[in-house]
Length: 143
Image (cartoon, rainbow, N blue to C red; front, side, top):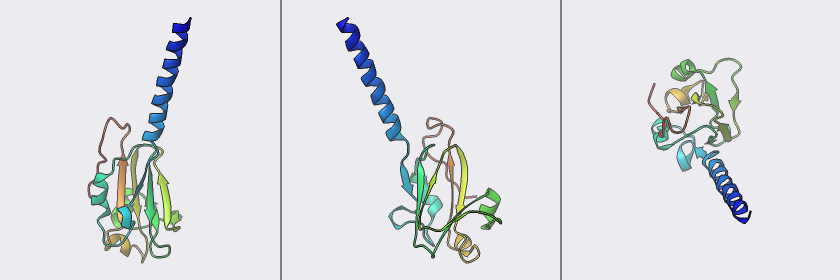
């Protein structure tokens, strides 16, 4: 009986440890643009090649409020640096985007009628894979 109890306790410890590790592996936050944040004239798309995003991770867009913004757009609007009517414009200067599912998401700065996006390279997209194992590295390429 004692051995069965010890085995059960060991199984509980192993399962608890695995669950704890799974939680730690999820929910990381990556700052777009690194320490300097979301800014004009920086190659944000090239910078993300170092990111390894999975479902559950978050992006933090840090910038001076009023100077920039963040808008999630379609791929077509991403390429054209345009914001469709009714799009949600984030302006807090500390905007967090969570990846709850796999797929491509596109973000631009809409300031100066899209000039920050077009001329200042303030556009980036992230393609989160279906499973972590299917793509260890985030695919980043210019459109």
